[in-house]
Length: 81
Image (cartoon, helix red, strand yellow):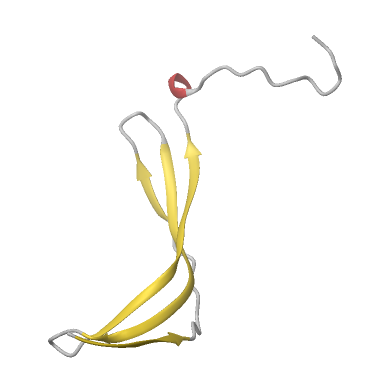
């Protein structure tokens, strides 16, 4: 592999794609990558470019089975019992 000084590559298009997962506990979650920046670092032995990313993953809970909920004591904003 040949590595070079990382070079920032401009992102010219952003298509938001969510992946949905149904879990065995009855919940459904969605996830998507949140890419902040992309950089080029070199080539692998076959000549393909190597890219790195800075970013993270966004998690959204879509559905939760009621058996997984935990009762909470949220204060009543009006002070009513």
